[in-house]
Image (cartoon, rainbow, N blue to C red):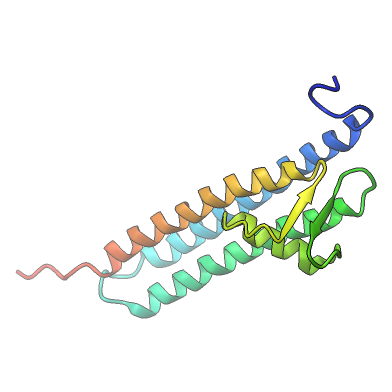
Length: 158
């Protein structure tokens, strides 16, 4: 099995895989419920040039993404407290909540500056997060486009 997982690290990798799956499911559900709530709230509005509604939608989506980033960030921080799951390697050399949330933000947005990196089994979380972040960001962009199309539609003259 050493060709797949380093010798003696199966339990740590299994734990990280389970945690990565659970946090990914959690953030997808958070995003779904948030977008669903926004769709119900704003679909009742009559189409018009409603800047206030669009700003509320944008800030609500931004808030969803920040909450999702924090979910992953707290996951990194929690996992680095467990011996054998890995650590964060960077210029500062600390494993703080701020470092974990920062890593999460640059991973979620797929920016990946490279000044902070996960080492060990927790790398699986970053792979799942970047894929999920890309999906959720494009989901938000699609929703924003649809709402802009609906809310900013010119009224039909008769």
